[in-house]
Amino acid sequence: MPLSISPAVQSALDEGWPVVALESTIISHGLPRPENLDAARRFEQILTDMGVVPATIAVLDGELKAGLTDEELVRVANEDIPKLSVRDLPISLARAGSGATTVAATSYIANLAGIRVFATGGLGGVHRGASETFDESADLKVLSEVPVTVVAAGVKSILDIPATLERLESLGVIVLGYGTDKFPSFWLTDSGFQLDWSVPDASAVADVMASRDALGQPAAIMIGNPLPLTDQLDPEVHDRALADALRMADEQGLTGKEVTPFLLKTIVGLTGGDSLAVNLKIAENNIRVAGDIALSWAGRSK
Ligand code: PSU
Ligand code: MN
Image (cartoon, rainbow, N blue to C red; front, side, top):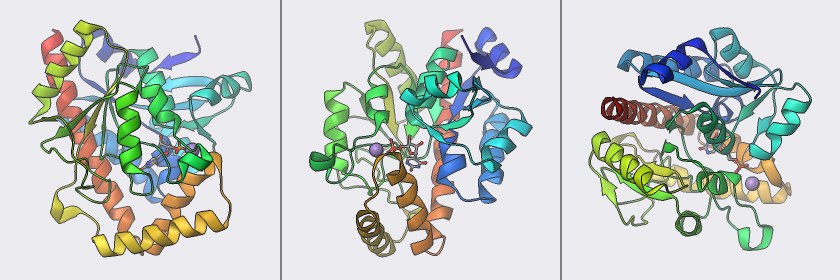
């Protein structure tokens, strides 16, 4: 199997120490240079400071990588590499290629490596107008198939949030609000959509992981972790930028994997960088919660 696990991640897995997987599409396509490299390093440092081993996931020179050296992190941040979902992995391997992994591909590789907890910014989901375009992120299908616990600030309001929640339900993905019963919508603390279940802390998440395993269910657990209200993007700025970005994507006739990166980039421009600052806070907030969950999980499997 062309899977290369870094020595630090491998020994953590062997010893049952806490490990958190991190996604690379957020680094290569979700954040602008040069902030992306600083952010990628900071994401890993947050975990290291907590006593958790970071495993940033990407594809480099035809190998699936779980855990990157600093040089490899620099490559992911600075090279023009493609965005890879699960179906792109065999092609990238066949060509000895490199690429950044989406939530779907990261979850898939984390599972191959035996990593149980994963932190990202926001999930992909059902796009607005999907009943016409069929644009639904492969993130959702993959989360119905792999037993990871993914911490995300919900999904962005660039998507159709109620449709995404319906699909998560159909696909059997377990959805838990972290200290909230409202689904977060990334830059905004509360999407207004109600969740069925919430958990107060990391230990309660580990309880659900254990009972999920006991039942042998195939799907992931999604933890909806909202930003504190004081950190969210100004809702008026948000609504205006969102409407403009959606209109521009429509005018340009974008389809397929270009849509999400285009919307993210355009919204950074339209908010004068405010959305970027909030984006970084979100990722860091999710990484801390994922670290707590990994610590709690490691404590119990000993
Ligand atoms: N949502 C974000 N930031 C991101 C992405 C989604 O807030 O960077 C990325 C993730 O890698 C996610 C992917 O898996 O976009 C979804 O893309 P698509 O809609 O093409 O499946
Ligand atoms: Mn899509």
